[in-house]
Structures are given as structure tokens and as C-alpha cells.
Amino acid sequence: MKKDFLLEIGSENLPSGYISQAIEQLRKGFEELFKANRIDFESIKTFSTPLRLVVLARGVSTKQSSTEEKVVGPPVKVGVDKNGNFTKAAIGFAKSQGVEVGSLKKIETERGKYLAVIKKKKGRKTEVVLAESIPDVIASVRFPKVMKWDGSGFRWPRPVRWVLAIFGSKVIKFRLGEIDADNKTCISIYRGIYKGV
Image 1 (tube, helix red, strand yellow):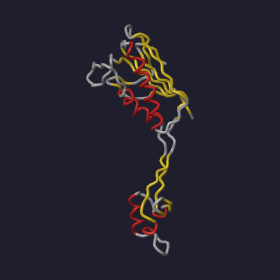
Image 2 (cartoon, helix red, strand yellow):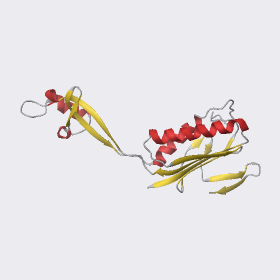
Image 3 (cartoon, one colour):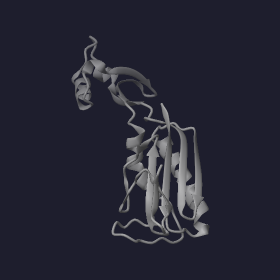
Image 4 (cartoon, one colour):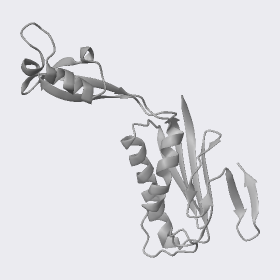
């Protein structure tokens, strides 16, 4: 199943020279985030005005793809005796990996045959990965000059006034500085008019 992801960072007027580099860094940041976390997506587009930077990712998978992890143990000649029984070395390796000794597999490596554990790792929900990772992606954006305007220590060229983050119809919950992400955008920060998306 796939959904669209939308992020909007609303702030006071950004300097015009800062916008294009920021939006490109955000695009690359989310592309790297999805790829590093095995989350498929169809496209990433960005939009901007002096008051907002927007990232729209289309066709994002709702969970990470599963993976297999191979943990190599002792050589077969050490882990299996002449009668085909597992030795203490194999039993100890299996125990250290939290598996039954009977689940060990024989694999061929460039150094010969070894015992190994094949662990299947289920993918996590994309919304969980996003909630953990979005603040880091945003914080990684570099500007010529930044400022602090609240007690959190978060830095941006101008005070951030709102953050919208939705995956499908669900709000991705995280904090940016002292602001909680929500599903609302601000039409005018000067009039304080807000409208739900």
C-alpha cells in the first residue's frame, strides 16, 4: 500500500537567496532518508514561497521492505562433528544469537563452508520512521546565517511558526524546536488565520 507524504515548514519571511538551496537540501534529505530506510517512493517534489518550504513525496510505501541479515559463525568442520552432530562451538554460537542450534544453516563463503544464522527483519511502519527522522532531515539544512528564537536551541534563518506533516491523512507527530507538527497550515502569519488541510 502507498500513500503521499506532505511536509510544510512555515516561517517568517526567508531571505530570497536562501530558498532554492534549502528546498534542494530538503529534497535530497528525504530521498536519502527513504533509500537508507528501504522505503519505496515514486517521486519527490518541492515547492516554496518566502513563508513556506514544502516537500511532497508521492507513492510512499506504508512500511519498510523486510531484510535478511546473515550472521556467520564457526566453520562447519568446527561446528559439526564426524557423526553430523553439532559441537559446543555451534551450540554456543546459536545461543549467542538467540536461536535453536537446529536452525543453523551451512553456507558457502570464500573461506569455505561455515555455519550461519539467517535473521529476517520485518520492516517498520513508515510513519514511525518519519516521526523519528524528520527533525534530523530539517536540522541538516544549512544556511549562510541562522538564528535562535526559542529555548529549544533549534536554528533556522527566521522563526518557524508552524509545521505541517501528514502521511496519507495521518499526522506525523514530532517536535521542531518548541512547535508540534500538525495537519494545519497558516494562510497568514500576520493575521493568525489557520486552516486545516
